Length: 638
Image (cartoon, rainbow, N blue to C red):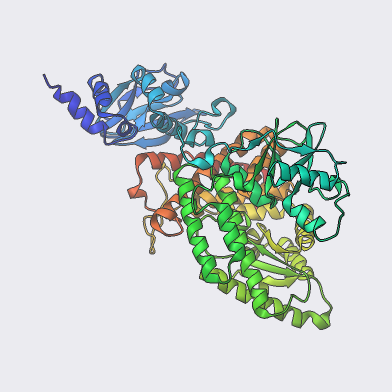
């Protein structure tokens, strides 16, 4: 006989996560064991500190409020309505309820037996991930040491269980590489390479790699007559070598080759150059699995003859980003790869522009990115933010020197605009005379911002404190960076003004945990994920990093370093890093899907799972802002 009640329950459950992730036959068995409960308005289903029930609940009809008593007062924490789950704590932590639940109106609940879900969690990982995400949004402190590794916001929890994307797989390196010692002659080393049909030989000492000789070294150092074939290998070897452990993912290898600008990586037992060499990985050993491989894109960028070619390459990089995001490659890796591509495009635009002008720069200069590109977080084609600093010159030369660099900057920003990076609406670009300055002028600029923190200067300093060298003289960049940190150290109160601007931004959620959306304009009723969620975290990471004098720009790297600097607050900073990863990944996917910047999210079109995913990130925002208030005494700033 047909169980019509069970089928009706099934029809309801399959419309909500995580039940929509369960096959129909299994879901029907669950539906058969569901208990139906009716509650009148204000009737309590469980109280704070009660022992856990044998069921967790989903609201079929009506609404429930969750509340907690603290300091003798009752605080309403959330209002749950149709399709919401609650009472999950027994499933996750085997603890008493940390809050109470009461009917906000006449309500019908479905009670799901917890013991049914033990096998479900094991057999359906996505169900487990959803339940953990839901639990995280109602946890008193979801990122404490106690819960570490069990929450959706933890990066391990959002990795795909079975990932066939080849760039996450371990590389296939060449084991037992051919080696020689430092005193072997170049001729002998070349003979060994020829006999073994290889293009490199590793120089070792006590089985540890200390250098490498490649075909290129022999061509450029010996073939040109700079060294003799009778000289020893040590004289022409490239050193130090870059070493990695045996379990190196393709994506990691690609990033390493891009970052260090080398063609070979040494594989050692523990990943350091102080352990035994076990393999060699050459650039060509990487399986170039798709045309949008980052190594190929970088090579094509270096050969590009015009901005249109760069535009085509950057378009393909967008496909690469989408592939990474969809396959759930850790977002930190994605930012590294795409940032290298963006940097390479800017470098090539500068080189092409210098060639177009027809004469070399009159003095040393540095092109630096600010804002999201300066933090290496620009995954989407948003607007460009950049600036230029040139070496101090005599007053008599200043005008001509600045004219050259303004002409150069104009040509570069034009090319970047063709590529797809829109002009900055606020004109924060090197082509603006205000942001094309000598080193002396830049130092004075930062000094004024810090000493006279009026709102306009604070907003500018927020943008420019995330600056990253893209092209040019490293010493100029370092000189400017050290000057900034020096002035900050002398004027710690300035950080309070930076914090006040951050806290002036409304929290992501309203009183009943409803998303705060735009009230008017073209984005009315949309959630501004950049301003309300991502920016508070980037701002906090910046302020704490400046406080400690850290010359780090990337938000994730900042939080991870802060975990080391302030171990007593490691949980807080880790929660912020994990929340930021999820938010950046979410925004990027939104932007790629909708072919825009991903900034404004249509909340009404989000699944309940996505809503929970976002909400799980908001608790760290509140926690870090509370920490800012206390640390920098922001409430005292008028």
